[in-house]
Amino acid sequence: MSWLGRAHRTLAATPSTQAAIAIPKVSGPGLGRLGFRIPARTAGLLYTARGPSTRGDFEFRVRLDLLSGPFEGLSFHSEPSTIFVDEPAVLPKDTSSVPKPPYYPHYGALSPYQRGTYLNWLQDPTGAVDPGYLFVYYYGLERQLLLGDFLNAVDEILMLRRYHANASFQFYSLNALLTACVARNHPDKVSEILSSLGEGVPSNIHLLVAARLGLSLPVDTVAGIASLLHKRVNVRYLKSNPLLYKESLAAALVSLYGADSLPLGWVPPVDTLPTKRQITFANTSFPEKVRCPSLPSIVDCEEFIETMSSMFDVVHASVKEYLAGDRKRTKAREGRCSPPAPSGHGGVPTGEG
Image 1 (tube, rainbow, N blue to C red):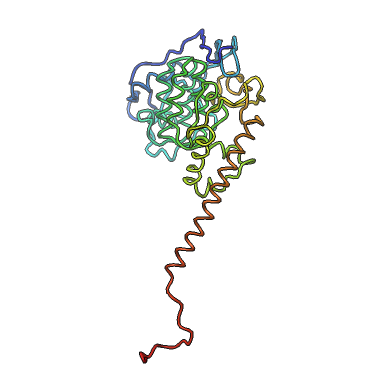
Image 2 (spheres, rainbow, N blue to C red):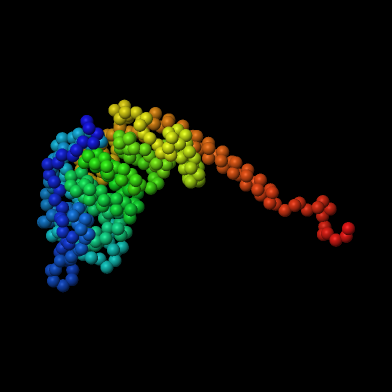
C-alpha cells in the first residue's frame, strides 16, 4: 500500500461554526439560558446536537488507510464529546466541589454542574482543568483529525499540548497526530509536530513515522530512546548528568553518522519487523482496529536494540571516563590550594631566631 494513503470518508463531520453556545440553566430566576463565548476555532471544532443525550446510538462507516494498512467499512459510533445543547448546565461557584468526570468521560453522562464547569473552561482552553474535561474535548479533536477539519484540529491539539502537561494526554495526542498525518496524507505536518516536542521518551509510532519519512532524530529524542531501552541500556548518567550525557551523545552521533542527529534509514523494512498491538487514539467510539492496531515495532527489533545499545555503551563509557578525570583534576586543584602543613615541633612561634 501507499504508506501515506489518503483518507476516504462517507460522512463528513459538521461541527458548529458559531462562537457562542447557549445552554439551558437549571437554577436562578426564570427559564433562561447560559451563554458561553468560546474562541472561534475551538467552537468550530466542537460537535453539537439537539435533543436529549439519552437518544439511541448511531454509527457510520468509512474507509481509511492507516499505518496498519487500509480498512474498508470501519464502523464509527456516536461521538462522546458531542454537546447536547438542550441539556441544562449550572455554573458552580466552586469548581473544586464538583465531582471529577469518570476515566472514560463523555459529555452526555456529565452532571449539570460538570457540564457548566466544562463549557466554562472551553471559553479559555489554555486554563488549568481536570484531565477528564480535557479528554471530553480531545475526543472530538481526534475525530476531527480523521474525519473533519484536520488542519485546525492539529493546531488546536498543539496548543493544548503546550498548556496541559498531563502524561496520558501527551502520549495519546502525539500518537494520534502522527497517525492522522498518515491517514489524511499530510507528511508536511509531521516535521512541524515533531519540532514542537521537547525532551521525552519517543513512542514506537514516533519512530515508525520518522523512519518512513526519512527524518533524522535530534539529540533530545535519541536520548529518550536510551530511556525507552532502559532494560538494555545503562541510563545512570543520563539521569544524573543529562547535559554532559547529551554532549557525549552528540559527539557519538557525529562520529557515527556525520551529524548530531540519528538517521533511521538503516532500520529494517517494516514488513520484516515484529508486530505489536499499540494505542493510536483515545476516542472510545473509534473501531478497535483504529484505536489499537497491530503495527510494526521498531523498538522490539533486535537489530535496532543492538545498534542503539552499542552506541549508548560508548556514550556511557565516555561520560564515565570524563567524570573520573574531572574528579582527579578537582582533587589536584584542591591539593595545590591547601595551606602548608604545620612545623614538626608544634607549639606557638616565639619570634626568636
